[in-house]
Image (cartoon, rainbow, N blue to C red; front, side):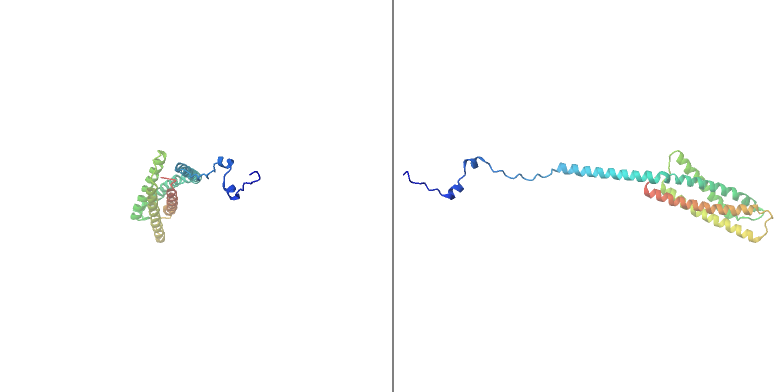
Length: 214
């Protein structure tokens, strides 16, 4: 009995847990935390707001940089067109008035010239008065009127210069050629007026497409 030895099975020793091992609870891996929908929505809204702010700042920067002088260009052109209409009426008045005694300009050219010059003189005055009281024309309507002004001024200039050329070739006007000079000057200034209306049309359409004018 005293010499007897208790044989121990090594497999049982390995499988039997010790006291220390029994007191330890194995840690389970924590599940991966998923971002909540509220956090995702906040991140998305923050990105959207920052993007909108950047876009607004970019639009404001482009507006103030590009339209600082651009939106004052149509009123300046209207002032020039008003001056052209007044000069053309003053130049054509003397030849048209004395054409009853000696033909300097035909009656249909006189009717077209007075109709064009007076109509767009009134349009320029109304446009500038609207700018003063901050009541602007829609850019599409203004573009249509500019296109009409370009066509009518070009047609009027062609008719006036044609009558001037025909009258000059007849060689029967008095030695004082002042009325013929007035007639040629009216046709030349009408060509300049047509160019002003063409430039005004291009500027108005460009600013209107960008949204810089109403």
